[in-house]
Image (tube, rainbow, N blue to C red; front, top):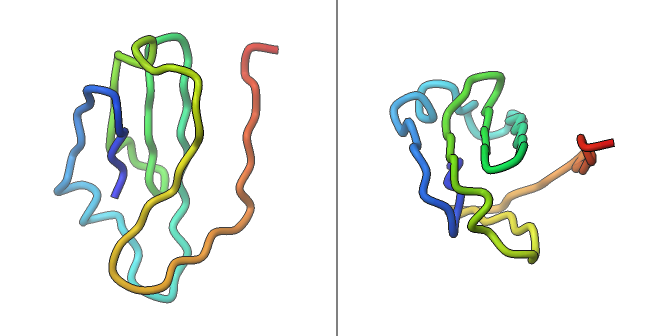
Length: 82
């Protein structure tokens, strides 16, 4: 889905279900964090937001999925502060 763990967030479950591509097709996520603001886009649609990124501590980026095999490609991190 597009849940932001460890941060209070608003997740539009209905929109996620609408824009999620069927099995066998690639989904595209864009996660942007600027200051305390987190925005998660799924296939171009804003599906989850949070204004509590400042509560997150240094740690790991984790990808979690359920129900079957999952594959990831073209995973990139970009520091937007520079």
